[in-house]
Image (cartoon, rainbow, N blue to C red; front, side, top):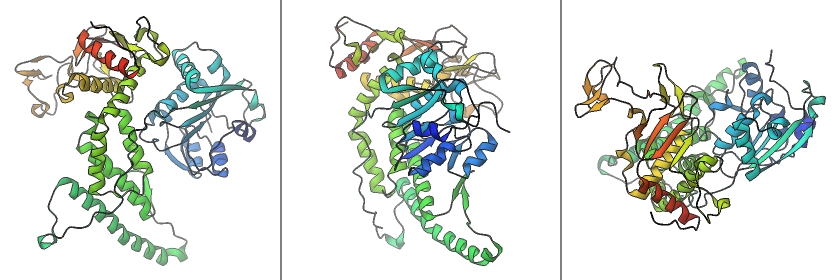
Length: 484
């Protein structure tokens, strides 16, 4: 019935993990039939959410907690930005990759408690294990639990390791607090109509939809009354493809989250703030449920983002450099006297893994979704802020291999067009997101090469830009660079 990687966690082993889940929102990424979920709930976890890939097991654990997906590797940081703790017993075959994904998607301040084959810790023969070992050395502890699965439903016969990681809280400046808590008052207008603007219209839609839910609630109560003798109860409705809503509070929270996301999508905020700040925005929406979705609060959010822009970009600068240098020696630029324990400057040439993939046209494409390419975009935003470049002026990297002249881009139908609006349904740009291996291309502040194994090699076009970036980073770390 279940696959070969299914090893239920014995209660004795769970107890040995010393889990403090009281009052916390906890994620179980490989829930199985729910042994860890049961323990978390019986020990006063505030809420338990889970993933489980195997369909039969997913059905079982869905009766115990909120299962938000099948494959944990599809989980994004935005989905779990409100959690406090991750407790996991991932498949031992690739436990290192599961734990790394948990680390990368977990919010700041989150604790990760994970079981694994002890060889995952002791034998760093793979790059993923080396990366995990580096993270453990900086942010965690490990212990050897021995052959603790000898008492389990399915025995492993191997030594089991316990990893505890503590993701540090880096950002104290922008927690999205201090919003006005009073509701907006309706302003009387001629004929009772409010002046139109997009923000007001969205708030009006939000308020109107929540009010309409009262009617739905009345209908649900009436249906329950009529059908209760038949054993029918617990009416709900579905938002999207899988979101079951049973109460007005649930609907209001879900609609509020969607509305905040709509605001930032509409304002194209992703182009102006880093991925770390976007996680904080989602965390605000997820956790600050008592803050009304009002015009004042929306504009207050914009004020906070603008007012903390310098702190935000300083944090982004540090993260952007550290992402490429902290665990990768060849990306570091060393100079005499630099205190390496406080960080490493970025080299003129550097390598980024997990950015590319083969495409159906025989070339190599940039994987811009759930990959390290997001870190390159953050780095680009930081550089734009330092050198005064408009981020919107930098075209998408997918266009870098296209054939372009003053007459526009060459299309697969032999035409030249200036924008995608001129494309026919059946055509695309020649070489759009299709690159040759080991060939230099130009994009933004960099020249880059791609390789089938997923890596990108990059070098700065302008040494002055490279210098200003590292100069700013050095200033944050209290170190001055010599002039070039």
